[in-house]
Image (cartoon, rainbow, N blue to C red; front, side, top):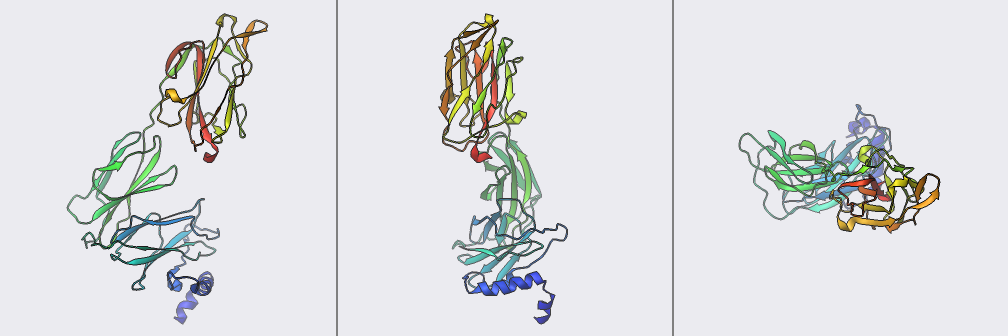
Length: 398
């Protein structure tokens, strides 16, 4: 024991002293001197302070297995050590290094466990963040063979909101499979336990989104490292819309004024349709949910021969279903031309406004149309005018 202590790094010695002082305060994982395995990853130096994860949970708890998930709100470096203690026997199981999600296997039915996680960097190792959980009181699924990675896994059907995965072994085996689906845009996980091939439970997916599906073989003895596949759901397009003649539009200005941005984008009178969405490299409009917006058309001038009135319409795809329904027409106004003088007729109008819904709206598409056609809808063509698509994000997306 004395030789072991002299071999410990100064960092771990400090942690041992700290853990002894904290031992009386905790009713979980008493033997922290054994628990913290302070290893530095020499291939990836990390000189940041260690810290507790911001998110730490145990889910998908069964009789003989459970899934541990942990995450930080910001990117970090270093490694992680997980310590699992059977509170009935006091025995420890170590997972070092550990990644999220981590499948805890070899558990005993109807048993209470304590699990702790430590973040380890070149500077320090955090005291374990801990929680308790209890396994289900029923038999294990009856497979005492070693677990192994599936022999094959590949994507089947993938569309905008649905995907299938085919996986399995060439020969027969026992045990079962679990899957972890990660939304790579949000970092959130969906756990599916058990799963069969083809995996048909991947429904209600977000369009135009990258996902990673990890599939693990689980037996009573262990769980394999997830075999992962990354895929992106389809991006259904919006219906086409275009003004056939935009040549009489010039000095055309569209602005949405909020606390973050003013006068978002300007005109292009050479085309009947402008794609100013984020996906096309356009500028997003940041809007606080529940605020009143004003859509301003200032100094809009038109050819003398254009005539009037001019019809202004604005749709926002609130439900993000890639269509503009009747109830998503948030503003509509017809305004006659008034002569300002000179060789042109210029449009003046009261500033329209509407209240943005009190929802967290990220990446909503809006469609604005100015035309001489009172029946111009969000799709199709109209004789004279222009359509513009742009993106709306609420403040929560920043």
